[in-house]
Length: 200
Image (tube, rainbow, N blue to C red):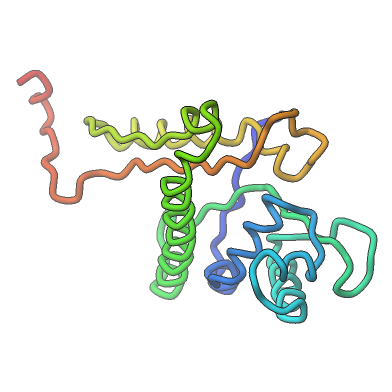
């Protein structure tokens, strides 16, 4: 698979469209179980088909989902646009920064819930899946350039099988949806090594 660059979101309305908790649950359902119709999405997220249909159209308007072909109205299937998304890089105006923070908060809330769901259910999983699931934590010292390089390496590693999200035929037997998250954030009040002090 060719290297895929994430879509840079620099538009406030697009970030606001993404930062809606129900829309994020819809995106998650379509990504994991799709393509899905609005009726099928409604069953997965516990909302009405009419409400889900409206939100799917909004998500399509901002490029997060697209019609998968076949069907009409609420019975037309939708699929996730799997180009990855990125925001918050470079200079931002205050409105875009607020929208980006809201989008990140909604996304992280969903991922935290999914992590705790796994933690609660992992002992009931088969041994191979129980032992394959993980979360990991490290603290180390990086320069800003090294941290940026690590981010790109992780992004490339995570995207290695991105085609499987949009193409069910690409999913190998025995595979199941796996959520990948990684953090790489500087310690806010940690010290910075001064030039020439690296060999203390």
